[in-house]
Length: 384
Image 1 (tube, rainbow, N blue to C red):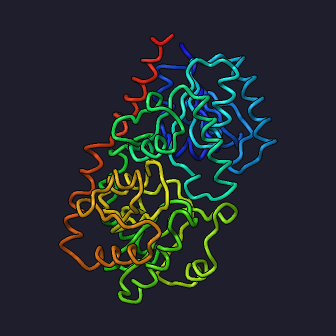
Image 2: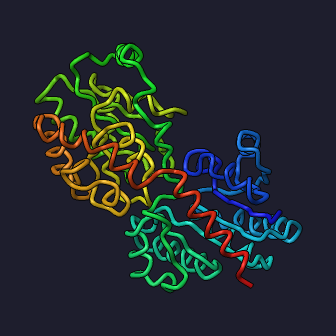
Image 3: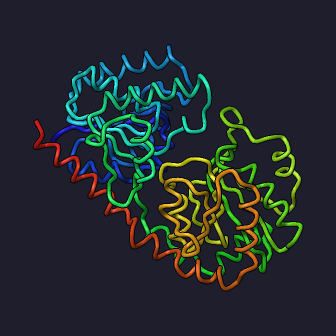
């Protein structure tokens, strides 16, 4: 059986962005998952039934540590001699593609699920651009997980059009719409969950799922909700995700509102986000940049219309005034107005809600994405 190595910077990406995909691929190839955080990675390997290899990767710019990671991975790949090395996330991309090229791996694939450099400036942006260019130069195929990302990559001239391809309608992993289905939760379960969180029966609940950082649009979201809550006390904002103060902290005013506002409920990171989506009325996801955001698909599959920023990925999942509302990026005014419409225009809300699930099930079913990637892998078996 041919060997495939899949690499992410941290195991969380394997768990959330590629959930069960490696297990599926292991039926056809011998899959090894490479990432950092050995204990968590080992646990993932047991759950998915795949081999693992720990690599000291960080999400920050750490040149010396990265060089050591390239050397360690190079030696591992020379020993294993895989048929494919497939990387995800920027740091895993540069380390994985460079080590794979040096080791003579014939098929070096990199999935792009977002470009952090789009929000960077000055010297940092220059560095990130050079890293991206080197990653793509070492790769044999590039898979942006949205059509918008493909356009950006070509405009930036990171690689040629012949090297790049979007699988299906986009997304790195698709979505299991059987799992993400509100029918798993009875009305009694949902009532108990709302009560536990202090959500009243008639409250309209806006929910955000993701990292609570600046470039997810959290500053704009909190300020928008602050204004909305003044107009309507029967609203709640539910925040599901971890704070990351070290990488992209929120501003001090946002933190103050977060800690003091009685209508904002922050529950931290959750292994299973479905119960929180099930008790909510609308997703708000005003991110500055994305690849193809899973949470927008997850919310839609759970029957939630979404307010999203006009960026690639988001504007490929959401059609304006069909299954959600699309707003200008970094615009507090636009986010606030969209939340107001979602809350007050009952006819519009009902229309969006009725379309939400079908917009996902018809385009992004998980098995379709997995089979498209498997076809890619199998097609490479005939390439010399």
